[in-house]
Length: 82
Image (cartoon, rainbow, N blue to C red; front, top):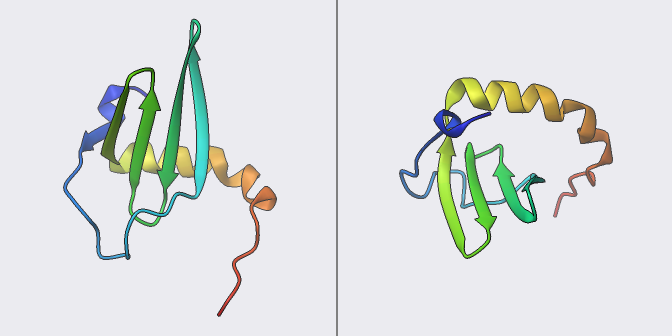
């Protein structure tokens, strides 16, 4: 994914708010960037040295990311009902 994978954040979605499904970390030199990814909203929050950013994920990038992360779903806790 590159910077074209992300779009300007267009505000709160109808799904009930940002609730990340995954955390991904990317390192450049000594700097760590953490991506909190919400598949329900198709949003991401990025935290890096001295900055943060919230944006939407472009449709094609979402499809690619979904495919990459499928193999990790077995490690996620199961959803629990009320």
